Image (cartoon, rainbow, N blue to C red; front, side, top):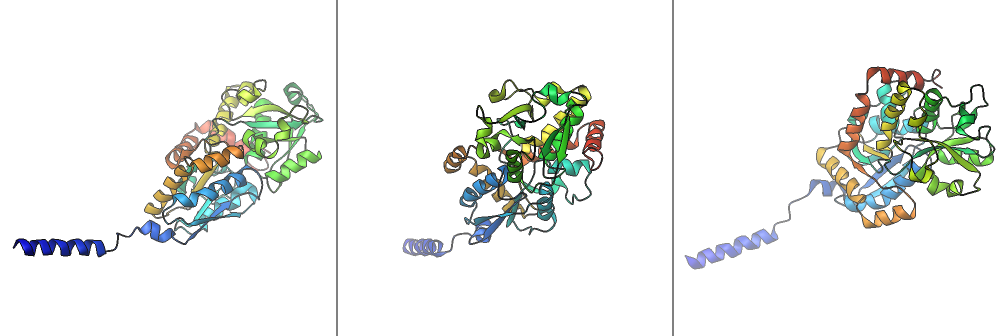
Length: 352
């Protein structure tokens, strides 16, 4: 009996070794596959830069190691890309997107009939930046009609001509908000294709200035920050306190004319917690969604990614999918009067 038992044990062990390893359905799905990462802007600016940076590292952290291909889909301040991701993109985990941080706010406000998505239903991966070490700056040329914040707020003074892409994107919405809450004299020129086009228009003198992330300025226009660079900062937005690099530049909260204006500013600033938002379409299978979410956060711990981000002067302060959804919920839970006031400002043809 002992010999028989030994033979049986050997046979069972051999069968176990010969049996194939348990299949991983997520790895099987992604092996040899290409994921499309859609960017809501043209091939320039901060959104495109961070998308391509993440794309170079994300595949290594997804089971099956798929390749990631970036596709630019500019239009309407990235609204075109957000709508496509929500309603048209495949829902199997093979499509991702990055769009303007203000898109969830735009959907919640309901001021733009072209919005065709519910921001809570996206499969959120997270945000590559929570903006905690960044600042959103109003930068103007040295030959602009307003040389100081006092000049820019003088009743009846000449307006600062600024450029943006479209209502719903920060470059267009924040100047309107600053006009109504802190009294800046501003004239908006919307319709630029992307951030690169706005940078070029400022450099050429077609515009007096623009609003821009500090991190993007460091990557694309570091000369703007240099002494004698021909540019100066007037206001910083999305900051509870002044950024250390611009200690002499007031925040929008400081300049608000009353408590109602300050409440509007603080509501709009919530979007900056998801300043580089990555998402997949709704209804991605749960196990693939989890793999994508885990991979997204793993990228931001990857030494190769961190080294390249530092070289590109990109801020790295990620938040996960749960924190992104919490931010959207906080926006939606704002006091009704504050939401209504922001709707009035941001309604096309009224606020702008």
